Image 1 (cartoon, helix red, strand yellow):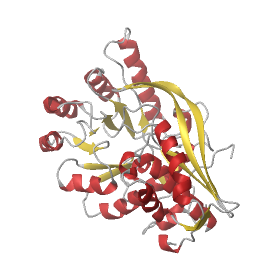
Image 2 (cartoon, rainbow, N blue to C red):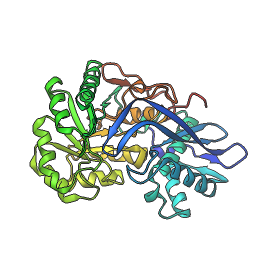
Image 3 (tube, rainbow, N blue to C red):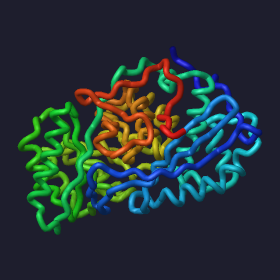
Length: 384
């Protein structure tokens, strides 16, 4: 049964039982991930908790520990939320997720552009609390029937060019890829960019991985405008999709790459909202859409998915090495029928030694959706 967002009851924050709390938890990765902006072995997660007299809601902030991704860090997000939340939300007897951005902007007019992941986490926590108070599942907000399971993609790293034993390390990445394929994952995401063994890795992966397994290269904007031909050549080697090859707002290079027709292109850091993603499609800057709820918020992503059918583009839900708090929310969003490509919702044990919530598990590359009868959106921390 479809439920309208406007019919969800508001929540009350700031009375004797309501609160906003910030939690920090450090999670260790099962194995290091090497990307164009460095190596990652762990992540210090920021989680926002909203409590009301009837329920609690959770939102995970996707901002990483360092500023290399989009300039927003988890520490800065935590400081911002600690400062703005009481002023924006205190004493609110009627609060909804759709009010969060305007309330925050009334205090800091640049907040949503400077701290998009912090604001998205707060909005998510309020939405989660609303859904739980109404005993309603997030999928009930879809204008269509959700899928029973969502296709998951596996994320790999890469190898720095100056690695002493690069050949052995590439063999290790290839082995991890084959293990993922044997587990049923239909999409492999590898980090690519200058200073990494991208050409060699793509060539070796395509030599051993079947053609129906999608290879996606995430460049994190690391290539320059002189690299259009090189990136296009990766398509000739068997890379199916490249994500954010060039710097944000380098429209000309993205359009030039799309025009080669050798590789599909999606944007990540280059779009600041779900609406931007749709505009980029119309402007021939990309062929497919990556929707990042950690940056856009789940409501904006849901609105964009409802419009995607008119564009004929592929779409997937992008992640931020999420804990189960956000990973479960992404699973639910990925059950929207307009999500046509495998999303960043792989099993928790591929990434974390121990997850914050009930772990996400995959079977034959699919993750079962919690179901429209389970209230809420986010995963619940085990120590809640």
